[in-house]
Image (tube, rainbow, N blue to C red):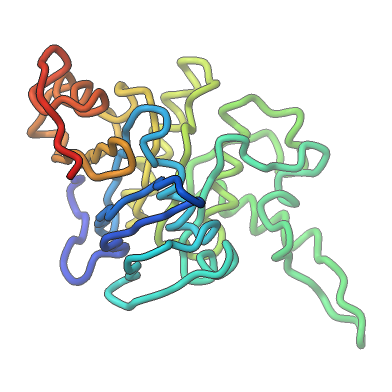
Length: 265
């Protein structure tokens, strides 16, 4: 964990024995997760391991079939993503869900714009929103020509940065990122990972789902592996080797080249 990170008190997020069933399919079985304030947690696992399902439970997309979710020590339940956002959990999806034909500032504050009232009529205050957007981007050290640019004019890395800016514009405690560098060029990957480090330095916790172990080892404090919808292993990046994490993804506790039996009972 980075210097200055606060880990005292209750975890910002704690999931206890989370299970999720879709009919007869057990997507998650008794999964635990803890996340401290200002920590970057990498979540790894093969396709179908349950990573995305767990994140959708944490972000209010899916209700858990069983288990408990605590935010800063308080039990919560989410009926929809709006509930999670109101309590400070934001998710940046792989497709980013940005409106390409709209300006950067419009995307950042979409649905939560600052308005001015004229009697009974409320109108969007475009100037105020552009000023706020520029200040927010500067605070995150995100550089664009103008907040008036349309998102469709931006590079992949810049679009990812705008999605992060939108997620953190309203006092987020946790940002969940799903494969944020999957489609980016090498130079843009570094910028996005540095942006994640910047969030950590501001005390915002990040959960990073990624198949790119270079990203995990560069930016994360800790990594947890899911296997067939269950917790498999986890550890601090300072204490483990890349080969071990590759093994965990494959269901081997001894490293990528070992044949360790996995007990799912």
